[in-house]
Amino acid sequence: MLGCLRSDYMFDYDEKSQTCCPKQVEVNTMAAGLVAVGTQKMKQLHAKILNETNMSHVIADLPDNFTARKLAQCFMSAWNLYGSDNAVIVFLVSEIEWNVFDQRLLEYEIYALAPSVKIRRVVFDTLVTSMQLKEDRKLFM
Image 1 (cartoon, helix red, strand yellow):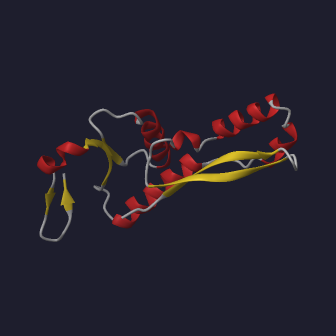
Image 2 (cartoon, one colour; image 1 turned 90 degrees about the vertical axis):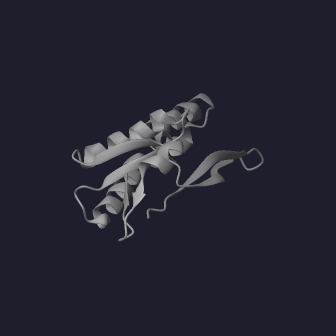
């Protein structure tokens, strides 16, 4: 079992002290959606916004953002711990999936680390008919 959390932050500007700092606004249990915010592109977006709001002095303090790669590494660690080259990483998706592009980004990051790993997208509602739990408690699809 792999457990990952995603914490979401926004900048809070205090007019009185004229300071800007990140504030946590949300914590998500494992959700691959919005993993695209875990890229250097988001850092570039924040830098652009800070430039446009005359806060360019804060840009040097923006951290690098390699969350998508790190999340892919987490998936690969779980895959490696399973101990079988035949293991498959499964993305459980909705019939109508709104986060497909974020999920694909994560999928591509996993493939960049290990091109031979099998990844399958499975619609949640089809699990009952497509899986089988063996006596040794291994789940097959």
